[in-house]
Image (cartoon, rainbow, N blue to C red; front, side, top):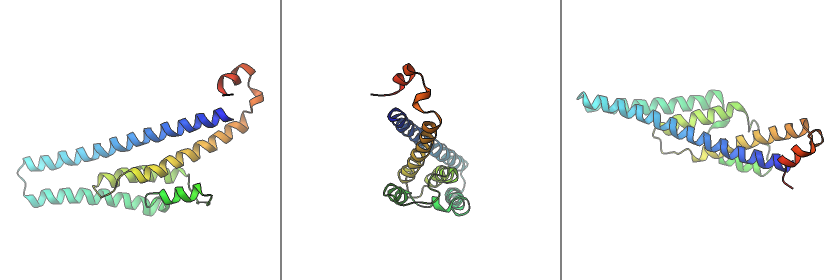
Length: 164
């Protein structure tokens, strides 16, 4: 049971790191696309107002999409998520804390809102995303421990996967 717990702790950290890399790469991709389009308008000698409207409009569209996701799909995804994680760790029952819908909206909403050049960063939402991953891995760990008790494994295999 200890080995499975440590294994899922490592898996949680690796998955959270992978999601962090995914968030950064997608945010950079959206920003590069927008910068390329603005640069294209600049090279075509468009009026400054058109360039400004394109920049402001793209930022507004990204922020609006992120807001709509939070408003209509998962209202509990609003904010950084750090207070919810603190409450959860202190024993408060937070409803729908580790749902897939919340996870999806947190990831996509973070990409959209950070890409919109709002004065925010991905650090706060990553705390909640990591907590969701940890809660999901804990549920999976408990399921596996109940489904595959230690006595069903051969002695040699169990010695291989456990730390005494």
